[in-house]
Image (tube, rainbow, N blue to C red):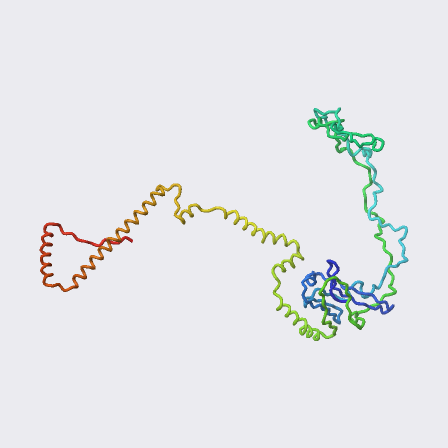
Length: 417
């Protein structure tokens, strides 16, 4: 028998072969040891896997899954029960002698009990230094009948017996150190030694643990080539499962390693490549689950490393998001602050005055441009004889004005940006 087996939470990979006793013809099953590593993932990942068993002529064997060795050993050394029986066995008819002494230690026969050893001393004695506390109420019981309790109306003395009120804690004992009969406490007895026993010494007659004698095994045989197993006449499956979608195919039994390798390349490797291309790579979450299944303590590491920083970040954002910078908001919206020296109305008046000044400056600039334009147009026209005479008269008048009045110049006022 060879192949995977899942029973509850136990994951196994069996290798069992039948061996015939050459002397008696009896057939027994030989079981390989269990794999040392975990093989649970091969049962739970729902992927196609290749299980291989290789038995070599030197009696060694290897068990691999998808080409990875998970178990190996020797048919003569690592099978249970062993292939070859022991050469000697215990004599079932042998009996332990009556004078056999298997006591490793014995009481010292020369030891005597000391004269001052008193076995009657008790382990505990009354504390001689104990004193009754002041205010102790000797005449008051710890519990008293409840004075407020009343006998039920359906109580039948003949059927239920004499009615008694339930007990409650004596209220007088709550303020006192104690109630009832006072007794001193018990302490360890310094003179207590217990029952005397002689000390143990090595037994001079000790003979060791008795075992029955060994005799030659009448059924002994030696098969040095167990790899030459019984012929395989058929292949079958031993199935009992409640898990769906379990498939088996491509079973090969061969004595040629090259044939097995070629068959693996033509079947399993192609199917494995197809599965990898059709399905996405294993997610990080699935990888974490696979690791934590083998090492559950890693959950604590993931919580501290991953979840804790996220929780702290969320807490920081939620707490810090509620505050606003008031000064920044005033600068963005030009809103007046409470300590502004200029009232709001005065600020509005100042803004309107500035707008009027800018407007008057623009009008003056337009008039100057208009006058300059007219002068240029008048110069470009050809003056007539009458115009020249009028111009002379005007120049005379202007010259007289220049004498009487100081000379004025019109300059273009620079425009405010």
